[in-house]
Length: 103
Length: 158
Image 1 (cartoon, each protein chain N blue to C red):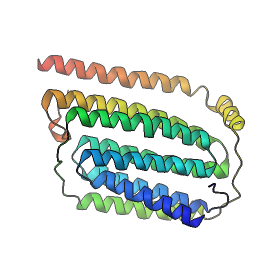
Image 2 (image 1 turned 45 degrees about the vertical axis):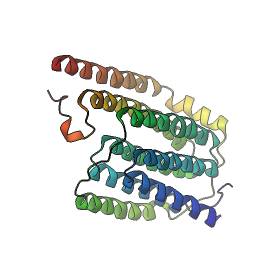
Image 3 (image 1 turned 180 degrees about the vertical axis):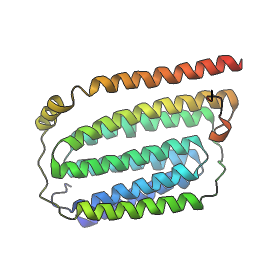
């Protein structure tokens, strides 16, 4: 099914809801994995907002969403790599115990 | 169409909350992958099939498998929970501010634009092609910086 005339406000509410859930998860969880997933939820909320605006203002929003997806995938790859290495070496997944990147 | 949107909306919100709140990491991954797939459905329904396909391939495919790989490597474990009153307060504040901003900007909806693939490609080449170069350098810098910092610190620990 294809949306044709739905109010843009609906999609912005989806975007805002995802943003709020992601912020809650980012601030309330101790597990790094949950924090990475929360960041991904925030990025997806932003992408839904960008595409909603693209239906009104042209193709720029879609291209920015493409860039955001590519960079978010990169960020997940780097974050999970760090998580796996640190968890293997120290057996921990909780961010307050990981302080070995401090100078 | 309102029913279709409502079902999509409820599934997206429910899976997002489940991905945050569940403690079994495998079920977290299932909820997360469902969320990413439903968001791809939003893109398809808005008339952007290329973006939906990209979302399915990169997010629901690649990122979900990466998270699964990480979960299977570090092992499943129950997580401790923080005191979350402050987080809930911040999230509610973000939500209320966002709703006000959404009502402010999204009340007047014009007819949807029919954006073809040719138009996306034209706008990309004319406006954003040069942006790919600094983004590529940024990506390489991030990966190399993470590798350098980690290897240096791990060597120092040994």
